Amino acid sequence: MMPHRADLGHFQRKCHRELHTDMRLALFQPDIPQNTGAMLRLSACLGVGVDIIEPCGFPFSHKGLKRSGMDYLDHVDLIQHSGWSAFEAEAEEKRRRLILLTTQAATPYTDLRYRQEDIILVGRESAGVPQDVHNRADQRVLIPMAPRTRSLNVAMSAAIVLSEALRQTESFPKGA
Image (cartoon, rainbow, N blue to C red; front, side, top):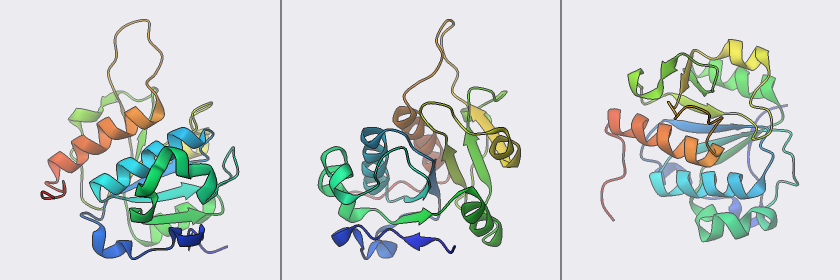
């Protein structure tokens, strides 16, 4: 099945001209609508496109995301993929580098040199990504944390790494 722009009522939008970079944020089978909404809002504010890799752990709808994404949902360039293989095929076709955020990485996110066409991939809140997805990533990065801590909230992790990637590529939106 071909990927498609999310059909969430008035969610369909003119976002291509609002994007400030070719970089994208990909969410692998998100579990929690509030985190998904927060990442959609983050992406809208930073002018970054979003890929949702199905299935989601909740009904993916405008109504379900409106509370956490607020009115920012109208400003997100969002593509839904029917599954990992559909997403992977599009990423390979467009020759995009896949950067996975994972606690299993050895490379701190600040040590990687990001590119404008990168896709920053975050896993499910409950389980991360399966081994085949982990193996497919071109790069794997982690956020160094204090001892005896497991992980950050996925939306916070996405914000930290996406901000560093945009900083390095000089791709932050320019003023209001």
